[in-house]
Length: 281
Image (tube, rainbow, N blue to C red):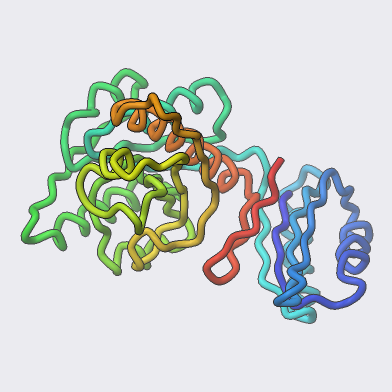
């Protein structure tokens, strides 16, 4: 079992949790913790080995409630090694979708991809190559509401617990963001807010930037401002062309997104306000 917990910091928290696990018959396989010295807030992730019985695991979860409330905690239990059922949203850029599916197929990402949804049909062949259903849900520019209702219905029907926006080039409405709060991950270039609008890589080239990158974050109604999970950067040399910057940027996007997805699927992320604590493996 995986336990993730956060609460106000106080002496003895680790000992209290370890004692509970021991008394419950559990064995700690891995423990990662962090205390924010500014906010005085405590975060921990514990991988617990426990009797392979649904009744025993349920007993531990139920018994923990009293302890969790007594320390003012927010917590979550989950079985490890479960593949996270996932829906991937795309438009026409293929690199992030291809990378996610290749890593999943290779066993690097613990995902069960339930569906690929797109507002264009460009990437249907990639989904079909991996034996995945592709659902084309076009979006009318002047009337996006009904389309996003169809997206939400399709995601819920698929049973997806994680939604990945793999270069899905649409602004999500607030209701959609709220419905999938804390389980929708987006990727974008890290030039914002300096280079806004079309051709950001060409804008960056003209400005002579020396570093480019990508940001993977949870989706919120504040555009591209959700809690950041992971970022990747690459150096820009004087001989790089705008096309080179685009190539480097794609690499950064693939790396940042795949790491963010893996950290989430492995229950290594705790959201606290607009920040995340990521217990990297």
